[in-house]
Image (cartoon, rainbow, N blue to C red; front, side, top):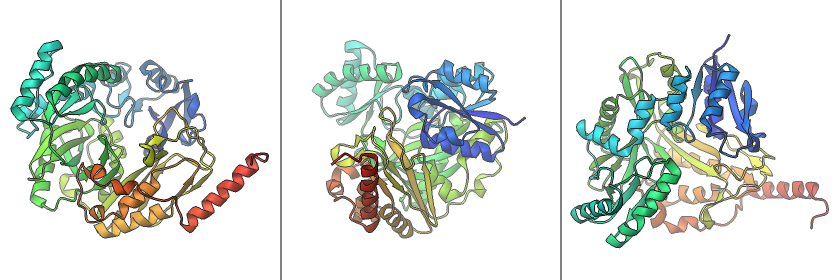
Length: 480
């Protein structure tokens, strides 16, 4: 009988994992909640298990997921990203249940999920880091520690949840009064989000570049990197556009950062796929930020420039196989850009457009183009989940070729019903600083004109709107 692997996720990442599982000759088991009963991920899987009515609560219910895996005969669970992927208790539950957890061990996730512990591991290994504190003590003592740190290093500083991740649990502090006010608020938010109210401080690196390194490490002592990604274009610490490799021209610096990432992974005794993240200041000093213990949303750009299937390797590593390639085999070819096409209105503070029906879906394609999505024409976007519809990734031999391909794809991509981020990305793709590769984490704030755009006036857009109107009239014959 074929091995079965349960996919403990939904949406585009569930489809991505299912494809890799099936290509390896295994069977993919999907799970879902009632609001997702029309989702594509349960239709392409070999089996699907209803967890409950949800929303969200059943996807996150460790006991239900483990029970679904056992009932379906799965021998392993792949959590993808988000949800349970960085939950050490879930990894431990899989281990106790005799299920292979496709990711790092629960101990590794726990150590690196605690940002203070991770910083200590990196400090002992000599990895350069932004100045920061240990976990702040409770009450007045913790506030005093925070004020002492700010007096020593100066404002701004970043107040962070010790167990935070994914851009959550982070707030920038500019003054003593704000520090006193925000520490209890941050503790409450951290407790609600991560069941841990501990926080710590880091000195802010003003307007840095955010560069990360993809790592693969097997149980046979092999650790390799797959080059860099630039994730500097962000909104409120959430990545919007991902690029590979980094646009930094200093090859010696990039090589050093990649070597440091491998060193950091080895110091943490890392296993499986992970991402070592760095901040780079204007003087080209780099600082360790964190290790993400999962496959990243933006893994597609790395796959495009290396030809290496990261998810396939994750599965093989989890089943004890050695990497089938060495560091010398990793060759970076050209450039890749990924944009996250969300059902959101950028002009309205990126307000989600859940509950709306996708009346027209006309995807782009062609040479060097990859789409990772789950939406289809007629799909009603649930209001209760993430607003990501599809990831568009383009690859080119040169940066100019890649940007040109992105422009063409965005122009020919039509989604009607919900507002989406497509026209917002069209503006970015035509903005001169982006075109020349000149951007850092302040890009969105310093380029407000990218929010100034008209509705799509292309011929494809006009046709899509016309079709949407006809369909609406057919479904609502008495509507005006």
